[in-house]
Length: 479
Length: 58
Image (cartoon, rainbow over all chains, first blue to last red; front, top):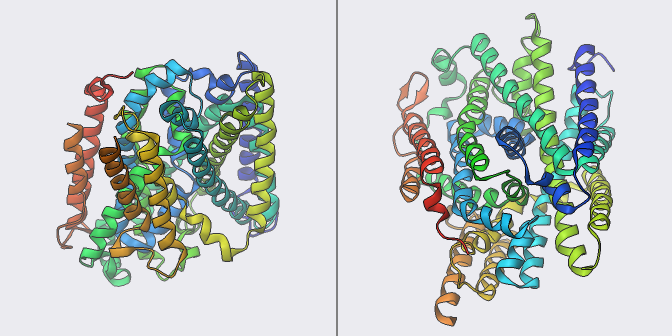
């Protein structure tokens, strides 16, 4: 460890103990498993109560991007990023469009993945494969971006003691060990710890910033001097972007396969309802404080570039190192960031492995025993993690943009789920045609020189409208 | 009630001007207020109207 390390020796030890405890939880998950079956491994036996279910939903939804990326966005976009609070709440409204109906069906038919529902509802293997393919594409993106983030964090906080590649490899091995030991149980239990770390970390850092940097009101003069753009008038184009972001997140993130798996894994309807109620409140207690911290930071540290803006919280805390106890707060922030990233990567990896095992391997090998399927799922977890680590370390930045369009593609599976639970007569052809039309339109705008935001809206949002329209007209005139 | 929540979601769009109150632009108060109301409405829907959302299944 060199002298530029952000974490003190005590901080490094705290991180090591935290990581070792995750492996211990992996073993606990293994010993708690009741049988070797996909349902037990990928849904934790569908027995999660409010505490674990809420915390695993919370930790999974708030990735490393929420802690670092949101602060950076708020720094660059000012108060306009308040949309982050609204869309994090709107995701729960997205769940409400389908979860109340899907949950009892999933219990009755023992669903494990999103593909199980699509196959059951539409009886089309082709549609199932397309939805599963889009899901794996989006989840891979999630894993890649978060693995890269964890590599940078490890390098930064250890002052280069642990390099970017070593950091990714080391953390990946820990994640894949506890995931393959106990499956969803281990992932959800570690998520619970990570969720608590994230929440406590945000609240403590918010309090520290308020005490040492002052409130928004007391920083007004500094805002006007250094960040006058914070008070510029909102334009029509800003309002259109606001609506477009809300639509994209509402339909995109609410159908994330790992979120649907967590809905399946609820012990009963009451635990699901309580967890969703708590999820509604969390953006006001997590995203909003992060935005306020970053905005106050923008007045004190103006002129940062994009990479610098994403380190705004660390910069603010680093300036306070002369205050006693601050090293503990910095350790807490690092632990919270690492926890947020790990909880997202492990959930995405679990979801990809389950999609492959249940919706691809099992369909091609219907005679395979549950023990064999569980073994294949674990093996695939190691394979997918190794593949993602290689990509995260080596993927050229020239094609990096390609994976950043995942949400605009994932959003197109929303009609299959949200309309499917409500309209019994909707055929797979209507959904399939809508999906193909929507994705084609979106890719046309994203992969060609055409504007990626036609009329100010994301191409994925307009593509989604086309998707819905094709579904509607096909259903109306063909049935 | 759930349908009404979408109206609240639209009300979160910034409409007001940027006059500064307590270091914050006016539109932020309105937008944050609508967002908070939206959150309260969703909690109410989840706790009180779940069965209505569930409807009949299969």
